[in-house]
Every structure is written in C-alpha cells, then in structure tokens.
Image (tube, rainbow, N blue to C red):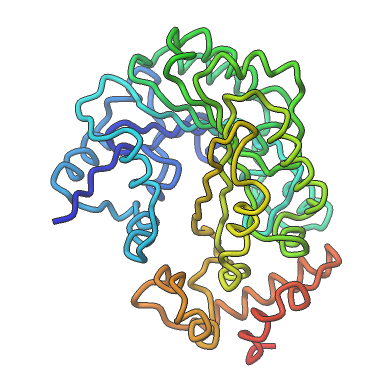
Length: 372
C-alpha cells in the first residue's frame, strides 16, 4: 500500500487573517479545501480538527479536502504532499509547526483571470468600477495580529514560512513580519526557509538584502502561467516583457541565498499549452546566479469557470495523447451549462479589458467552437 503520510497534516499550519467569515482562520494546508476554522490563539496547534486529520493520515487515508494532491498523484505528477515529504521526511507528535503559510494582506496590482477580490485589491477596484457585485472585505493590515499569533506558537520545529498574497512584494507588510521572524527564531540563519509568492512584477529594494541574508534560504515563488500574450491575458494587466525582464534582473541581483520556483497554475485556458512555461524556465531561468536549480511546479486552478475539468469533448480528445490528460478526473464528462456560463463570463471581462480570448488561445477556442 502506498504511504500517504503528509507533513502538512502533521506539521503544517495555514493562518489566514483575510478569511471572509472571521478575523482569524486556520487549517493545515494552503491547498486544502477544508473550511477555515476560527480558534482562540492558545488553541491553534492542538485542536480537534487537526487531531482527527492526523489520526486519519496515520491510517493511510486520503482526506476529501486533499483532492488536489490526490488528483495530481493519480495523474503521475509530483504533488505538494510528496514534495513536502521529500523535504521534511516523516515526523509525528510535533509540539509546533514545521511550516507556516501566512495570508494577511490582499494588496495586489493584478486582477488575474483565475483569481478574484478575495485575494486582490485591484480585482476589488475593477469590480467596483465596472459595477460587478462582490462582497466587500476588510483590507486593513494585520501585521500586529500576525506577530501576536507567532508569539503564542512553539517555533522550535519551524523550518519553513510561506508568505501568500495578494502580492507579497508590494508594500512593507510581509517584510515587517520577516523581520520579526528573524528575531523570534534564533536559528533562522541555520535552518529557516522563507518563501514569497510573487507575480513577478515587483523589484526588490536593496535595503531588504540584509534581511534576506538573515535566513538560511529565501525562495521566490513566481507565478507564470503562459508566455507572451497568453501571460498578459491570464495575469492582467501585467506585461510579459516587463515581468520577464524583472525576473531575470532578480536572478542576477538578489543575494546568493535566494532561489526560485516558477509556479504554473493550470486552467482550461492554458492546459493545452502545458510545457511551454517549463521550456522557457529551462532556456532562460534554469538557475539562480550561482547555479542553484530553479524549480517548476504545477497546481490546479480552483475557479468556478476556469478549472481544467470545464472542457469540451474536443478539448479532451486533443490532450488525450498527452501525459497532462491524466490530470482530468476519471469520471469527467462535458458540462454544457457550465461551459456556457464560462463563455459568458469570459466575454463580459474581455469587453471591459479589451481582450479577445479566441485570438489569444486560438487552439482552445476551436475546441469550444460548438458553443460559439
């Protein structure tokens, strides 16, 4: 029987101060679809939900909210669970987290196709300007609350901290928390990896270089879902030329303890073109400036309309010979109503943004031609 041990279930902590329903929400993993729960800060690490998840994982059982890793592994790709297992190994009965994922600032300069106002202030402005309804949210800074929570946790096992956005390199919120981490974790220089998720549009002020050097390793997780016009469409209103230039500049200028990972989110727009981003990474961005490898990972878009399952039979047939087809669930079938809603939603935003998805993704448009 396959070993399903997951370090994120036993050692992960996802802390979300931008939960829609409460001031503080937690679960064990940033990829889990388990609803965030709100707890007193002195009960965060040992709570009933975590205990039950750990017990089930000890019995080698998949949790239903871990479907993404399960689906990716079933397709023969390396999942987040497997990557974390390679890094951390197997550990039980921890007194505190191995890895913490933080989300506490929605500030973002992009309104990416697969995102929304829950994670982007530009999306909020865009919807307001174009009279698109969305639930108003609190965008105030939670830096002080994050620091308060950190001080309640046992950080003696901590080896990774991941900053999730918004855009983490925009403003100073995440830099302030990184400063506190360097103070609270005395072994930070010897043991702690800090990751920043970034859309690649932002430079890093040299004033932060000294802070970056206080950690064993810093990793920039750069979101790239396509090249050229495909990138511009999916990561609107970013510009591929500006982003690729900035990414290569970061590679050549950041301290030598900074490494990179290119994160590609697969949606029904770019699934057909899978492999193009990885080829670009290998050609132009294969290492940092001292030769450390740039990793490339894929994840699945969690979106009502743009998930990889919302495809036509023609689309399915076109990717069937490719290894990427293994990511499509075995019970997949075409959903005409959902496809029509997706096309209406796409047309609405294309009109506002001056885009044309059919010209940007012509092969994909042909797969949907029965509906056009």
